[in-house]
Amino acid sequence: MAQNVANVRQRRVARTLRDWRRSKGATQEEVAKPLHWSVPKLSRYERADTIAGPAEIIAIGTVLGVEEAERDGLVQLAVASLETGWWNTYAPDAVRGDFEDYLEVEEVATRLQIFEIHLVPGLLQTAEYYEAILREAVKGSHEELLNARRQLRQERQARLDAESPLGYHAIVHESALRLPIGGSEVMRNQLEHLLARNELPNVTLQLLPIDVGAYPGLGCAYHLVTSGPDDVQGVYLENLHDGLYMEDDAEIQVYTLAFERLTERALSPESSVQRIMELREHWS
Image 1 (cartoon, one colour):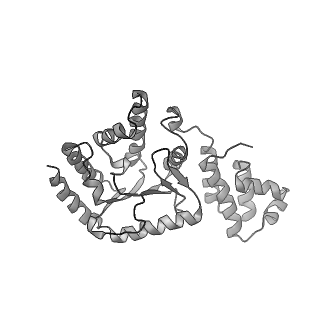
Image 2 (cartoon, helix red, strand yellow):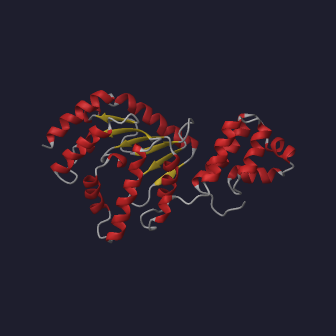
Image 3 (tube, one colour):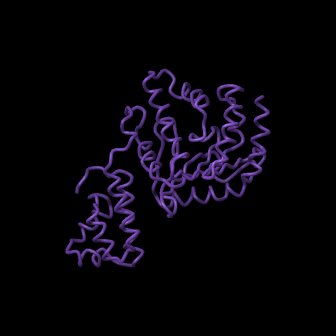
């Protein structure tokens, strides 16, 4: 089943097939031979030059002795990768470039780990706070684009309240809660919303106080995306255009270690609540 450009989930299927083989210490020839495939054919599946479907995944998994549950999980991902995402109903200006890749992995993620410096994390923003950001970020844009961005944000935020909710661990620099986005009333309501969202069992919120000074990954905000019980699968960096989604193992390791160190430097979840309550009074 050939395709010109593999989407992010299809690339993940390909990497998993490769990782299965390497974890078993098998060469491509040792896997291809019992399947009566050529080595180039297997190589194309492992690079996502040709998209592996359920039959190919089951065949490779069987040869390598992969557990049935793990094999079936990858089959489900491959099938899901062929479906049109809900975000594709929006205008191209609302969803473009690497942001589309990020939405695709966010949709199937089980956990997000977020570090934000200047803004409240997107899935924890109030409508008024986001509106204040939106009006500046896309100044001069037509109302149709603004509406699309609003609806897109609401769709994404709903993951926190879903039947199988998204795990969400956000570390927020204190400066983000002192920046007057939208004015005092908007900020006070935003901080109250943060406290309310923090009560969800799937949400963990930590504040990085200003007096920490320099910190791991200074000046860089990012999202770590995890699906299933595995390690982090991707890193997303936001920018003014469409963001950057990275799947390179070395890059992922750098950001994962930085987040782990930030977790240690930030206030505990309990102390973070107290600090947010103090900052809320600042906006009274």
